[in-house]
Image (tube, rainbow, N blue to C red):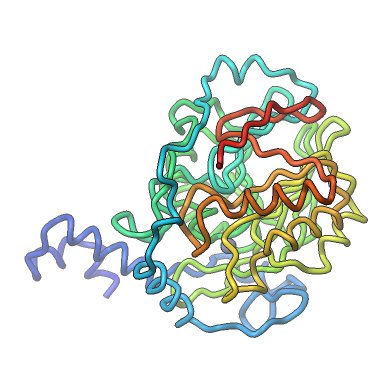
Length: 369
Ligand SMILES: [Zn+2]
């Protein structure tokens, strides 16, 4: 079967047009999502048992058919309010303005969904880089982005490190990784995610894997991989085969938190006690649904997570780029704005491409209304 798809045999036997062949290959890759290579390291993890990674507190797993049910619902539910009616106001980033930023504060740009560009000292870092048109296993179908990236991979300066939270398509994008690998010094990923990166051509020596609570210092930057309550998988048969999590990034007496994807759980308090307070918490705010209450947070829970983490300012992520859930596209930002005002919480909702600098006020516009 593998040979059939990995050669031109299929095209020859079935007289497939090249475009059809490409689609068949994508579907095959999804059905046979690659298992991680470094299984020995996985077994050593306290979070790995019965052949899968586990959350600290168990919840009922829905099984592989839930993924198909979600795809069906996504494809066949009316999408009028789930997509913005007009282009989203945003700012494009040029490399001169990047180079002009000071070297003592943490600078953050939101490029889309959960894709963040950070400047730490003289170096640039990316978190969960997704530059593709769709957050999907397939190039020809699936949630399409509402806005372009404020900067292309080609225009990015050299990247010191790429940080990944987990292997879902809206956080780990094969085409982006392939395009980034030659301009990136190193990749920092959860246990097992190295398997995909290496399969996509990243050198094994260019990837470091992390279990929860593991840390690494890279020059003046400290990285800590922290828990999340979520799951992983890129196909029908690799559910929870690789780890998921959140990240703490410290630089020059400043620190930020990146939630990745997570349901609300006791881990936020634990992380806050160990590494808080944080100057900025980037917390998932969007993609929630009554059908998956455990693995994503409602805006109320995101605010509570921010309080547990001892954050000083909240930057909502995981919204307004892809139509992945069933709420109106701007509902997450409308909700969190109301909640933050009542709770007197400092909210940072930059336009895509607008710089956020720790310690400096942000010029806010309500671009999502
Ligand atoms: Zn996810």
